[in-house]
Length: 279
Length: 135
Image (cartoon, rainbow over all chains, first blue to last red; front, top):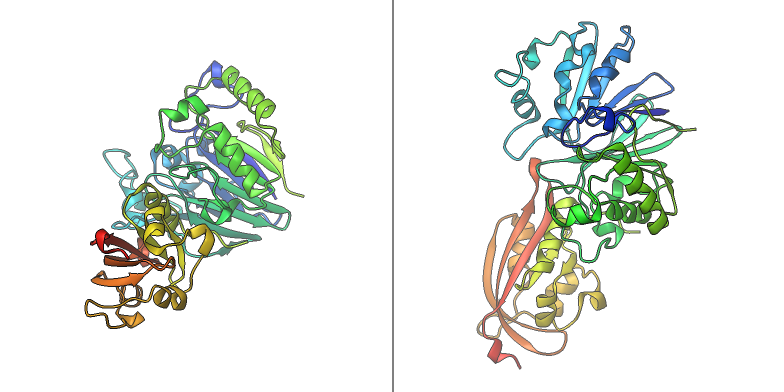
């Protein structure tokens, strides 16, 4: 089992020389099983390059969308394998209280926002709504649960023979919690992240920035570290970097965080191209 | 370790902790999983002292009585109606707090139903309508 990061940025793509090391593409993570199962976690702008790297012989891909904010789906129309008539593409994501996943997704994949309709894609596309209980994809066991973020949003827990990856790219578990964190059972996302080998988690803001953005659906660095400690993860991958944070800013933010917060887990801030092997 | 509560229940707890209205939260099995500080005043015991209360415990522990002083059956309590019928319910009655004080209260209860009909439990809001009658 291997995870590779193709997009690490939050909210808006931020390409340029100042973001070249951590990356400018929005959320996309590839998870590959030892049996060849291919999962794609979110379809931000990073999914375009992932699509180009997948073999044309691939017969099935499962795209697990956390929510339908643009930075998590804007790459779908540029995911090359969806033009392959020999491919089965399964897209998983949350419905809303009044609209099913198809209706929500086609608001983007239709004119005037995009010239190609979902139904016009050559691949055989199937949609599945989450959360729907645990399910299996190849060698992986998948859990999806709603988490604290504006509009219906899920996080995913992917367990394979080699370990567990938890993916919560947009998550504000500290919202309203006094103090934070509360007990595990009262902490959004804890069930997904508990004991994970790798936790990929929203860390969009510094503590100072968060104070001005409470309720926007994202976490501060100290909140993410506290959440990771509560969940007893082995490695934290701070993710969904704010587009205004250049590489030098992120270097400084995480050097300070590690020095002052004394994490009991490994910390590897998300960089495009980084891979994580699950033994 | 207790399993994590669903997000709707977590957010309901957070909201309750910010409100001055007494609020009870119960899970689908009827267990009180949280009540806020204003509710502690009426119930006469802190949540940190009682912990979760089963339906059998809370529906009888507060000795609910109707306006004429007759015992109320658990099935007639608004929160039990909301849990059982998954519809809102409202009633006025008397309870005796765990500290021995009596309260004339008005209760509105409603079910918590998430997207795709996911049933998460119920919420009860209390009003101490005659605070001066507390004995």
